[in-house]
Length: 393
Image (cartoon, rainbow, N blue to C red; front, top):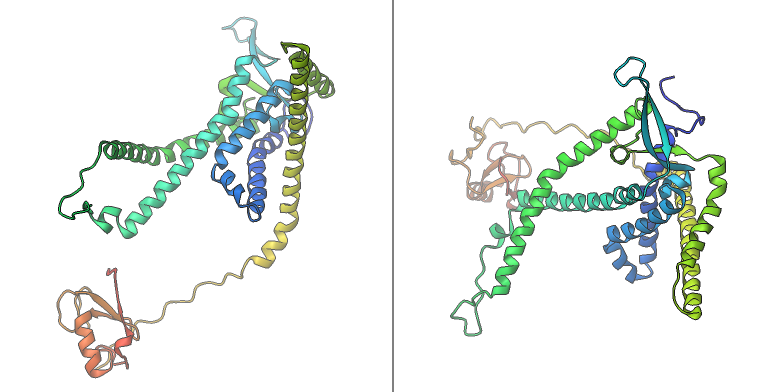
């Protein structure tokens, strides 16, 4: 076979790595949904949802830091029994000879690698989320401007007068500073809106390339971030899984030994540490249970909801045939921009609803008021059938 699908060896399969990579997004979706349901009864929770990116980044910072300290793996990787190992490549034999072979040795993570792992797991996803939100806002603003025009075009420049109504109030220095900040902020947003699609496309392309190479067993690095850090993700051995709890207890006992101060202060600090560790353990277990619960419910109800809620999609009906010109009616001009009544370029274009033909508003209003019919098709019509067109093609 081209790629590994079994569970043998220390190299994780592609499916294990993909599941570990998708777990944080599933966790965020589960938490957002839970908080959204709770916000229906507790409106103050909306304040948390307003800062969803910051709250989730803080939560993942605590989880990833704790997981890397205790298990040498991220929160998702430790859940799937995976560990991060530093890669050291040694060349055996002559470096330039044909018999030269590369030997890959795995060692424990250094402190620098753990810190950079937190940056890649927490800081970069947070920045990517903020850039994505800025891009979406600028995209919506550009769409609205294309449809309705900018604010200056819609409202114009407004002069503000003082109490006497004769002199214009001079802008203060604070207003000038705010305007400078607004201009700078708008420029930054425009730069982000212009550059983000290319950055996003490059990131997705590199991720796809690394995942494809990993699937074909052409590289041991699943992502560009792991390659930059020089880290392989490996399966944890049975002994490592058994020693995890003892390792955590040793780390926590060492932290208690570092406490300084009088005996009563040490006792208080030790009690606070125990409470913090207990809360962290319960939160970690609760988050894992929440992820699996919501994924199971999503799988359970997805097919039924699709059958019940998805409407039957029918093909759109064909457009109606064009109206026929009556023998005694006014002929249509060859130039579609001209009004059939006055043979001039249409002014205030308006359509007669019974026929769908467009005329000048003043021309068709006078004609329909007098003859009670469409000028071209001679179909019965009234002034109530005249519709103003605000976008004439």
